[in-house]
Image (cartoon, rainbow, N blue to C red):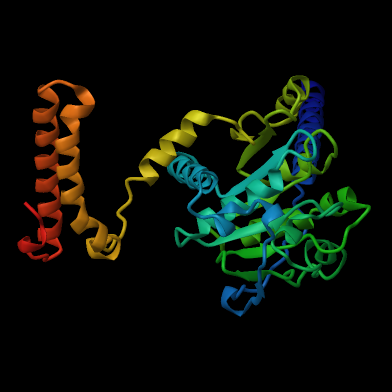
Length: 353
């Protein structure tokens, strides 16, 4: 009996040992997938007031309408998008928002810039992060030159916070991509990026991330694991239906908060906006003095001309009713002239009866 008991104990211990090893291996795999480093890295506190300020000068071709045409219908649609996102934030935890598209040239960088500007005007701390470190283009839309950013930090000292800039005018902070990197996927999968995003989320109300297209590169799959919500940008007349279906399949459906249709030609909204835009209070226009455009010499001669018309009317028409018609018209015109001249402080004696 003792031998059987010892054999059962050895079997139980071996089974528990294998289960413990499998559990430990699963934890390691999950940690590697999330990009969590083995050692916890401690960043120092970030003083957002000490960030370097950069002036912006967006060009009209950048389509940053929230900066260049704030009263336009396009800017109003971005304000509406910001309201929808803030309402959605009250029901689910959304702070790190990823904006992507299926293919290039669909306007995702333009949407990022306008949305960050809109959110910052609500007195919220917004960080605009340029996540495309292969072909960065977001900084050029604001008229910024190439400055060090995320790419340099991923290749350098992990304990130093990357260069974060305060954009003058829009009122939000900007973390550029930096110099283009060919091995961007290897840098992003090192685990340092996850650590950085988690640290920055404690200082900002919104982190808007401009990522590469979801179907072109694998970098977007890394960003998806680090964000709370995904906003898909499409473009009318450019986005193909089959590519849109593939893009939706590649995204995490649980994090997809909505889609933006760029370059929409909905004329109903345009007329609706112009109607309410016309209802805005305007300054009272100065009243013009009638004497500025009245020709007094011709106005005084007008009654004599009307008298000639009354005398010639029967001859021209050949009937008596024309005379009465001419007199009636003449008297009506004379009364109108008297009212006009009365407003202009003219003397009644100047009008011939």
